[in-house]
Image (tube, rainbow over all chains, first blue to last red; front, side, top):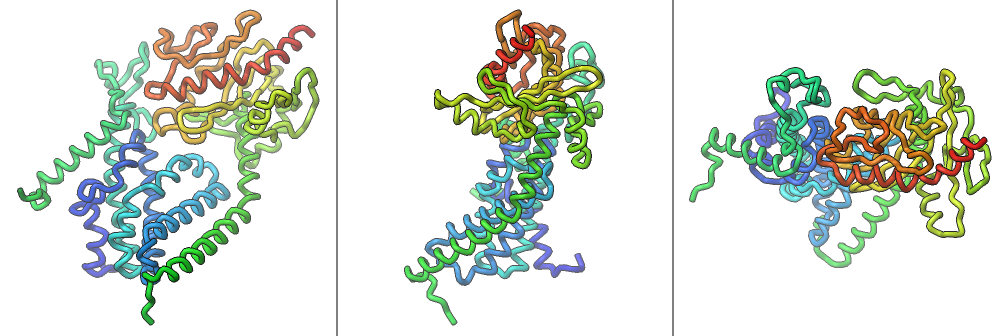
Length: 217
Length: 249
């Protein structure tokens, strides 16, 4: 990355692996469970969080020296809520179809703990440019996990990816593809507990590859 | 200049300024975009109504509306009459599609109010469609539908939508595999209104039986499905008297 200094590049790259918001910081689990039954929903949510966290981190960082410490959490919430409402209104006016796909996620973004977590942990103590990079990095790390979980849940739960059937036709009497060999979709994958189990498996793989992440007894 | 940001007076002043600033920004944004948003919703209603009577751009799998550019012309071409049914009175009203079903339902809780029921009559290739808008509750929020029927209340097409059902589960009520199942289903058993239930394990997953008043449910979205059944039962039933008079004439 020629454009960014090493320190800045680290802000983007770290959340993708060794400081991932979901698997290491354990933030944003709620939305990771709720909306990963479909790959498309996971992608849309990731993009929305990217926008809100990137912008929000910059705003919070700009006003970090004038925020009264006593009500800083309220100020952070107001910033997130304002951004989310503006995004929602603009989408409804200029990209109505997209806003319909997004409708459920808007509320979820406000409650996403990654956003409050990054405001509190990073934006309050760093300049706008670094805060922006941190926001982008963390939402990419969040999106990466969401997309992996969404991929497996949609593939194994519905036999589709982005709505397209990739494993054949599961309707009885017209079986094709792997269904003709006796395979069946696992409906359990569509329910939230399986998302938690997949996140657990990702954490397991990550820690077995990078031993430094394992806490010492 | 070092600000004493932990003073109570500063905190209160900051909070007041923040509320005013944010309030102004949001009010300005909401107001300046209102016109476009209402227009989008109006176009969507026309698209939904046309979709139910089979005027759409569907490919093999996905539900696709007629384009925004064409919807106005097609709406005037195919929707020949818009009626408002209020008790025994039936009046024509070219803006019937703008009637807010939610408001009508709320007003009808007061027994003295006679609910206005919009009905759109469409003509295509010699067939007449009667399209009724209905509204109900899903798991999280509102669900609604436009049901196109023939004069015997046999479903010719339906468009279902929702405000915030669970993605991947209840949200799939607006997908073709679910909506297409309604086509051809009967709503009336001779002279009694039966509705259509979204049923689990009804032994007819391919939906060959069109007179069982059942269609196959989506796994994992029981409450949304029950909401669809209840919406059809409670809301579409108001149109039965009109269809009965149609038959007798």
